[in-house]
Length: 316
Image: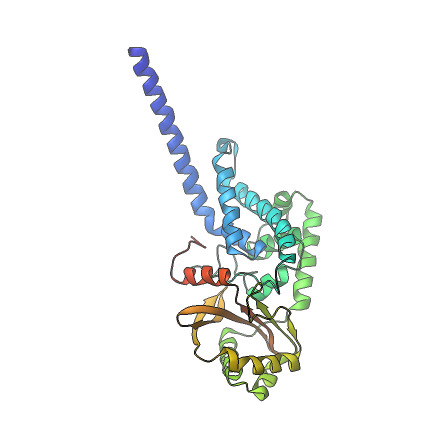
């Protein structure tokens, strides 16, 4: 009887130790979760895919010999970055079969304007859109350096490459993005031009549209085959202004517009009968409106609206 009691006590002790260890692992992971989500989201441009990465990272953290991990923060960031790169490589294939332009999934950043980053870099939808043109390793290197300020040596270890190559990856990514995106205007001017744009789009005012759009403006609509969503980008001042003027009378009647925040900037959430139908964001430089991005994909809209209602845990 005494032996059995001793065994029971030993079993209980082991069970408690396991619980304590898992509790501690949970605390460490949850403390790092905003940063981990910020890394995965920037690399993938999708909150749903970022959540998948975090779920896998958590499972790996649970089953790791945590006693042998000297720097849990670095370990978790490395696992997350590598998982995000792997998923980005497979996502590229999936997006090739996407119907029409693919745009990054917008997120509400009011609760966490920097979304777990040291700096609010590589968060703007226009930047995420350009990051998608880079290969996944370049993208991860750029994000880890520009948004999270990791040292090149550490990024090299995380990506299993040399420090020299890491510097080249970040440099190439920076040059690519800088060559394709001009310096944005300040938030006040951005909001003003968005208001002008929306008013002109609703009334079909060609003169105003031609005044505020750049010569090489591009309008992208992400609908993944949704009826009424343009399946090709509309390019150039004349084409975009006329497209918007023709589009207006059919689209804007009986629509409500709410000003919201998406990825740290102003956005317009357009609804019909209480149901969101599009989220509009604009990329605006001193030249004028460079890109119009219309997210109409119902799944992306649903997740964004849920985040506004506090029904998601994107950054917590």
